[in-house]
Amino acid sequence: MKTDKKERTLKLVDYDRKIAQKYKIFCGIDEAGRGPLCGPVVVASCVMPLDGDKIIYGIDDSKKLTEKQREELFEQIKQVAIEYSIQEVDAQTIDDINILQATKLGMKNSIENLTEKPELALVDAVKDIDSDIDQIAIIKGDSISYSIAAASILAKVHRDRLMQKLDKEYPEYNFAKHKGYGTKEHIDLLKKFGPCKIHRKTFIKNFVK
Image (cartoon, rainbow, N blue to C red):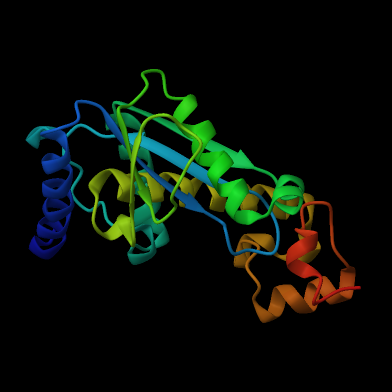
């Protein structure tokens, strides 16, 4: 492990250790898939141990990691985490209640699916989740909190794997490549074949009639 990566992880851990001085059990929460034209938004809640021998060096904001790094860390986090919860909110719900409310719903569900209720949720950017536990919304929280960074990796890898599975069901859209985001290729294929049932109607209205 390169020293800079180790130091980066320890900086995130230090933030969480300060939180742990006040809260015994707290989770980090992050999402993946707010922006794509199709598929669910995926939310993860993660309670991570902060003992020195259990720190996973390399954990960082998932956007700063390669796909290979995320895949490796995903498996390590699942093994080491005190507990975690990964929830999906589908395209239909996103269309019905909007993406922000769908994200909040996923966050609420992820908290409720933890076995032991945390006292606090550290949340990447999103405020006012419908939960009675304390919450701290942190802008770019996946670059600040170890727990949020771990949650960001869980959410991102879970969603990417899901889109790879959906690629086999809808091969004409090449979901495995662009993961549902609005790339030129995806938009061109959407115009050619029209939407499928996992496309978000409210997101694609400017591209198809």
